[in-house]
Amino acid sequence: MMIRFSKMQGAGNDFVVIDAIGQAIDVEQVDWRQVADRHFGVGADQVLVVERPQDPGNDFRYRIFNADGAEVEQCGNGARCFVRFVHEQGLSAKRKIAVETLAGLIEPELLDDGMVMVNMGRPDFNTRDLGFVDWQQARARGHADIDDGIEHIQLASPAPEYLPSLELDLMSMGNPHAVLFLDAPPNDDMLEHLGPFICTHPIFPKQVNVGFAYLA
Image (cartoon, rainbow, N blue to C red):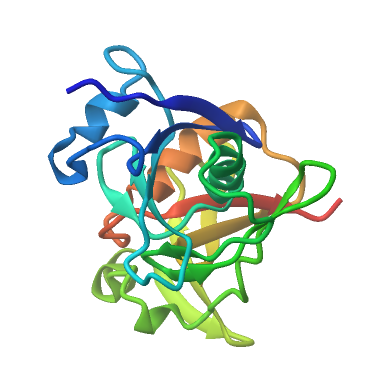
């Protein structure tokens, strides 16, 4: 199968972006993991697919596949690339478009200066109802509590030379996020040790997006 694609990046996240409207693609039959492979494929953090909307009142359907081939709910950096792509490919001339995602409808807008604005909505801190945490594992392997409406999980650190424990704040932006607040900016070595450990931890059955934050 020959597939035409574009390569784009947003804030360093790189994407393979595919128009599935102008070319016939059986999205369910494509091995997206192979496409995203950096050694044997095109290479990307995610693959973004532009489809016709399921609701004719909307403009597009936006599908997102991680590098492991799994379809996920949302990606803000990808949404910005999505908007630039549909305009540059002549798929829409509308500045503000209605886009369907697994997480719901978003309405990103192309601004006059070429920047893209995406309202991702309010974060949802009630993660117990969202199903992205295995709370039985959380209780067995760490410590979970709720403070000021925000759910926290504490895990033993795989790299105690950086942090003795990992205190994570949980939230959803249409997809699951775990945020680790630090006293100083993380270095690359810390990111490489802690990021994958948190992302693939057993308490997150479908994995989780990991963010590192600090107050400057």
